[in-house]
Amino acid sequence: AQSGMKDAFEKSFHIGAALNYRQVNGQETKALDVLEKHFNSITGENLMKWGPIHPELDKFNFEPVDKYVALGEKLNAFIVGHTLVWHSQTPDWVFEDSDKNLLEKDALIKRMEDHIEAVVGRYKGRVNGWDVVNEAIFDDGNMRTSKWYNAAGKDFIKRAFIKANQIDPEAELYYNDYNMWKPEKRNTAIALAKELRAEGIRIDGIGMQGHYGLESPTIEQIEASIIAISEAGFKVMFTELDIDVLPNPANRSGADIDATFASDEKYNPFKDGLPQEMQEKLAKRYGELFALFNKHSDKITRITFWGIHDGGSWLNNWPMRGRTAYPLPFDRNYDEKSDVIKEIIES
Ligand code: XIL
Figure 1 (spheres, rainbow, N blue to C red):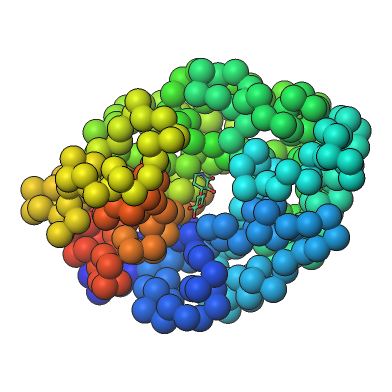
Figure 2 (figure 1 turned 120 degrees about the vertical axis):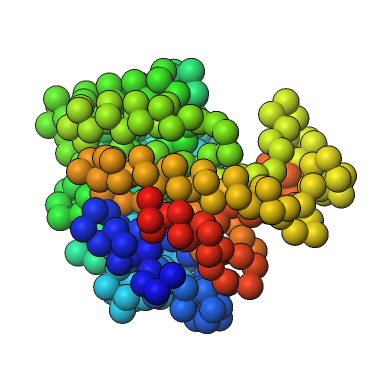
């Protein structure tokens, strides 16, 4: 392709990529070349999560994020902050007092607000949109019983949005989650967002992560969520898009998620390369997804891929470690998968 993905969709939505520290730190120049050509939005893959940025009560790790934000500004990119409040990658100390007893609601919310003030405040006017709350809803539509929810109910969500708005009234504020194509889950997310708005709390958009397979979810399922979110009055974005071609052993427990399975042909079938037939399926799937995104370009503000190239994808290590995954539009040599890029750009 002559021009990049970002040019192809310039009039529709931003095209983003999640970045890791090596990339932000300039150690992966080939990734940065791809970034510059194809992307006009960035998300920190891990850099801004609570554990990495705020590992101890009085310790912040801002240096990687300073570099991340500076890179985004240099590229004139739409800079996403991921994420302020989440149940995962959040240290235990956050929920405990100095005797390791669980904090009461008010103390926990105060701690959350202080965190938001420090992080959003430091990048005020520079980070363009925040995933304020990530993954607070279970797939069945019930609220996730996380340490946040157990201590504070839905108030932790409301107070997080209130605080983020107070600290940076210009930044967009989002709720973000996976499996948002499931009606029960999406309906709860929309109801939650409406409830916030009804109470005068600002929330601008709902992010669907978009960790998809080749077959599931269907285009119709995804489309129903785009329409429902937009009709409710919220911006729609796909925040962590990738397409896993590997078998997902759904019934495996956490204990199974280790390298023993990756050495098994059955779970890691393409370690010597992706067969042509699978490659074609991947390109076709991306083409169908982008045709859908184009159809609803008036509702969608951003499509972010969860990584730049296959070698850096989290799917090499999830749901089990040490596999060879092929989810992204660029291969392990940082080369364009020309058929995938063509399908996307000509969609
Ligand atoms: C993942 C990162 O890609 C991994 O490097 C890390 O080990 C775990 O988190 N939903 C999210 C992302 O919102 O933050 C997750 O990112 C993937 C699932």
